[in-house]
Length: 126
Image (cartoon, rainbow, N blue to C red; front, side, top):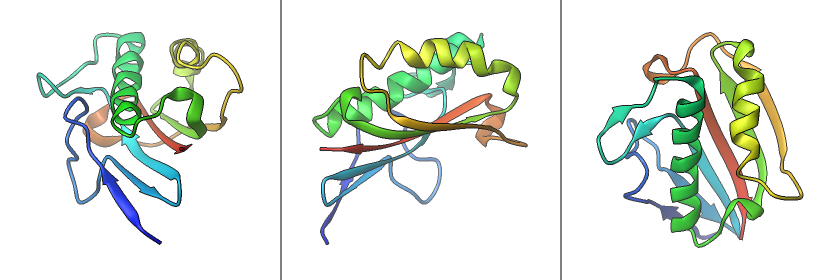
């Protein structure tokens, strides 16, 4: 197996000992993204809509760096600080998928990095 590290300067740099994404055997595993703006290095937390939009833009930047798009996503995992955000996050998230939606789970967790409200990770295929 050959693994390739994928890194986009248009998404936040990792804040720990991990990579934005790893490709192996055509699969691309994208680490959880939060609403950290790569350009300003600030969190976008004004509203759950804007927070989710920033998360999706970070994921898009990594997919683009890998040479693919949201149509290649097989599975997503959504982590929420409060399940009350589910509907709003779902509305923003759904704008990025046009057909053949990926498999997904959405769970409420006790805490997320930097006290954000949403984190999303993905598995895609080339």
